[in-house]
Structures are given as structure tokens and as C-alpha cells.
Length: 226
Ligand SMILES: N[C@@H](CCC(=O)N[C@@H](CS)C(=O)NCC(=O)O)C(=O)O
Image 1 (cartoon, rainbow, N blue to C red):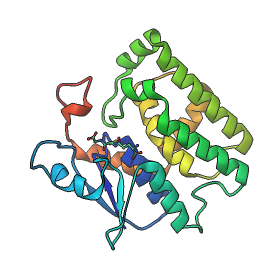
Image 2 (cartoon, helix red, strand yellow):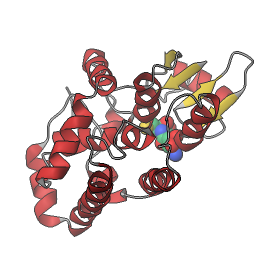
Image 3 (cartoon, rainbow, N blue to C red):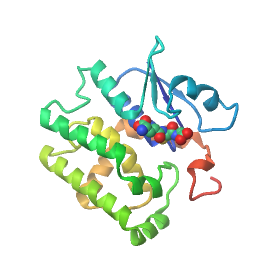
């Protein structure tokens, strides 16, 4: 099974699938397509052949079968590996984990727009400015805190549903955004953010992102060079 991803430094959706597979020790071959959207680039030559959405992540099986979109990939991996608790085993916890992933998938738009993932860069001044001026950003973070605290209180932590699950993989890029933009969160949310950042699969992803040393202008609203 191949997992096509984008730049590890920038691609939050790729990170979710990559962290999920790594966290559960599921074997896969990683294929990175650098975010170079110019005519003739590897991205442009390959992406349309593996997904109609022209977005990563995408799973490509040996027989050519493809699965695109992070939620579908998560479900496919869970179906193929019932031995792993990709989703929590208890029905209500599983439903709640799916709700949180769906909410993340469709929501938190302001956080995603103004605090894009950029693992190697730290923007505390920009984070502080948005935090002071942007009510929608504060509302997104307040919702995150509420969602996290409810699950952590019910499970006892350290991850949302106790053991690491798909929901935690889903929030791993959020932990990066909170830390890189220095957004203020409660002690409980900070502890969870730090537990995510310290998970070996997340640490590995971050280490590899830092080795990329690439600069993609389309993903850099706050820098002109690295
Ligand atoms: N809903 C999609 C979103 C995927 C997505 O937006 N991926 C970004 C990278 S993080 C991408 O491929 N961007 C390329 C582009 O916009 O052309 C998913 O969950 O997989």
C-alpha cells in the first residue's frame, strides 16, 4: 500500500493519514509529491492520475485501487485492520471520535485559514495579533477546548479516548498550529497538545518535516523566504 502525501512541513491532511498509519505500525510505502503546482512538475504529472480531487493524501493499493480524502482513508484503514483500535472499541466513544473527526474535517475554518500548518516556522506575534483581534479564531479555539476537555474527562486521557486513536491523529496538526502560533489554551488543552506533539509518530513526522527545508510560496502567507 502506498500513501501519497505532500510536503510534510505544510500538509496537515497528509499528516493525519501518515501519523495514523505510523502510530499503529501499519506497513506502507510513503510517496511524497512536492507541492509544485507548475506545469510539468511531478505533482502535476502524477496527481490527476491517482485522485479526481487532485489533493493529498491518497492511498494507492498494489492493484491500482485508490482511496482519497482523509476520512475515507481512515475508515478504509480501520476496515482493513480490525485488529487495531483505530477507532475506540466502545460504541459511544467510537461515535464521538467520528463526530470529532467529521467536525475537524468540515470546521475550524478560521483556525485553518489564519494559522496554516508550517512546522518549521514560529509566528507568536502573528498569533497574538489574531488572538486579540479575531473573534472567530477565539471561537474556534474555545470549541476545540470544549471538545477536548469533554473527551479527556470521560476517558481520563492521555489521549482523547484514552489510547491513541484516529481522533488524535486528526488533531495532531492542530497541536502544531497551536504551538507555532502560540495560541493560549487552558492547562488541560496544553497538556493534550503536548502529549500529541510528544507521540513518537508525530515526533517522527515533525523531524522529517524539519529536514525538508523547502519553501512553497502558496503555503506561506507570513514569510517571503525561509
Ligand atoms: N478533504 C481533503 C482535503 C485534502 C487537501 O486539501 N489537501 C491539500 C494538502 S494539505 C492539497 O492537496 N492541496 C493541493 C491543492 O490545493 O492543489 C482530505 O481530507 O483529504
